[in-house]
Image (cartoon, rainbow, N blue to C red; front, side, top):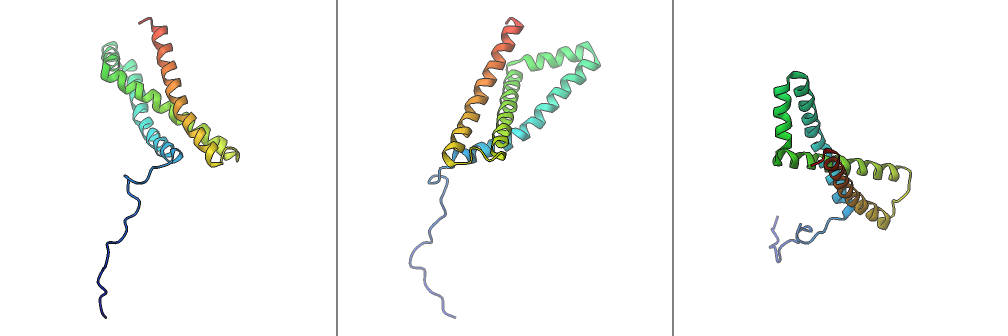
Length: 134
């Protein structure tokens, strides 16, 4: 058998610098990531409940940790993940009815999911701070 010499380099598949993922794909990936993040956040809720059941000192320590700026950042992220995952589920529920499957409509719903999750997260935190009085 003879080998044919390569006259030019083989073309590469679309690379990340060339390919722009559609918003629906990006929201699908983020939906999966937020689902995984909710496992971690649920462990934090369980930790908070176990601290409340154990002793006042333990509960005060967990409240202090959650009230620190890194703790609040994690709780803010958990709130956003919860809202985004919920709205992503609603988006999929809408699609399950056969509505909104057109490319343009699906993209608009995906953008609405992102915007809605940000707005709901901010509203929840604003309401929480207003109710708390600080």
